[in-house]
Length: 215
Image (tube, rainbow, N blue to C red; front, side):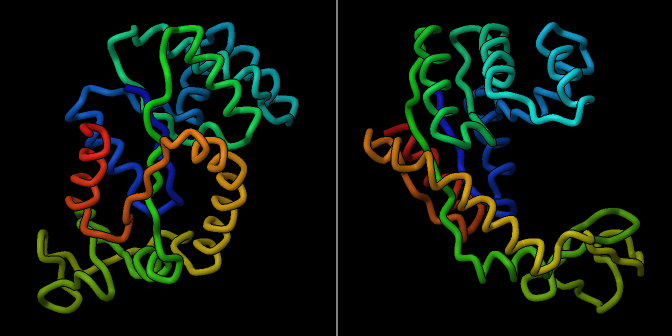
């Protein structure tokens, strides 16, 4: 099975992808990760990409398509793929179809984690972690039982990610909408898009995604 998982940063896409990998033995194909790995390994496609990036240019769709093709070939036909961060444009959607068709694969589902922007801002901006052990907390949803003391290790120092602020989150949301807007109608027309409530409990989101895949 081959699926595209869509959702803005903070929607829980990474967590859900990991659960699908663990349950179904699928492979998460993140173009950013693949690019870094190919450059590091010095593959033919990686060397091309490295030259482009060192020149300060954007990696072309052609290079990204070649990366995905290489990865699918290495995985073998029995392993399903979760596409993460690709395609982002209509031409990339066409390329993906060609890549899959040439390998006797097809796109089965496009699953979008649907989120409420204001609620997502609250979810992301309120999170923080213990600086000692990394346990996660939230201003609203999960505070330490004793104020200022980590439940897990007893530490008293906490930290927040610098990009977990409202301005950054809303910018990311706007970028996401701009990037997905061109491709959703393509897949909507095929009847393969399912929207799942990304604001629900994490386990409920997983159950909803699994219900789509097993239907």
